[in-house]
Length: 387
Image (cartoon, rainbow, N blue to C red; front, side):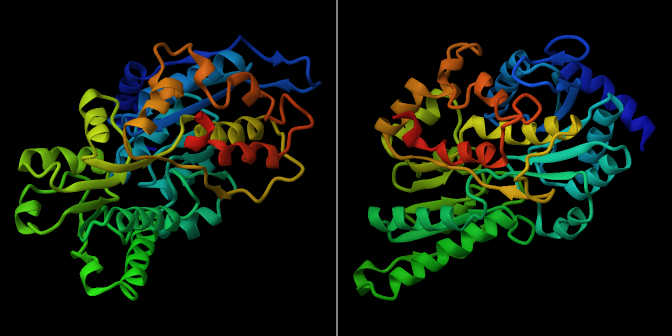
């Protein structure tokens, strides 16, 4: 391990991290005879993401309810594998029993470092890159994780294409992160293109849709020249964090309103809400905060030596429901009921999976808990759950 880098990062993590401990020493729940160990989980999050504060707040609420659970938070890097490895090693040095990473960059190396120290690792809001799958399959400590939406990206691409077809947009530009390394982006993009091509096969000449060549963004905003060079487009489908990496540039270029955006993610600020309400952001897709309990459960029970009778092999990835919003009415539903729009972190009535209910999904605290029960809630986190 890189001791000099680790010593520097330990200081950073202690400043940036929040430590939440429920109880001291071992704790015991009356619903089972199992005594829980203290489980410290290091959470590596893409800190500039608008979801970071909500994940952190949700985990704080879980730690208050679930005896023996503790979190340490650190920043992850979307492009630098070496930085992520050093951060992971620093968390291990702090005594973490498990790591949850929300970025896939460098995942195989992080998992190997965890394996060497008998530490578990999982993912949330991300999917292992294709190049890492073989290495991860050989590591027993990689428990799997939950993706940011459906297990494969196909459905997102299909849904976006159908939305664009229904809206009547005719000249479409597409943006993505590098498709050679972003497995879910390639799945979404390929399904999107196929759906558009299938539509064009039977559409009249006047109704056919034209697709511009895909532009790959290397984890930075699209250049303003994109819109000058693609003056005919009336809609952009962005898989590349379009809320942050496309829409602000559209505003700067003066094409917002004329060019619609179909994308993923959300920013929790007035400008984003206005863009959704006006229809400048025609549709955006993201996931509920509660999906991030899944990797917590995997690590917590593994550290406690508990395993569901119906558990799959280690390394299994699962998907979850997506929230698709297009317009003021759907945004208003979330603003009224979602934990993302809470007035305080203690407003747990907004949570679709409350901490007390989450606790009972753990084998450690509920001898009758099943893996089927754990995964069942993941399919109930879409927009309909808030209606």
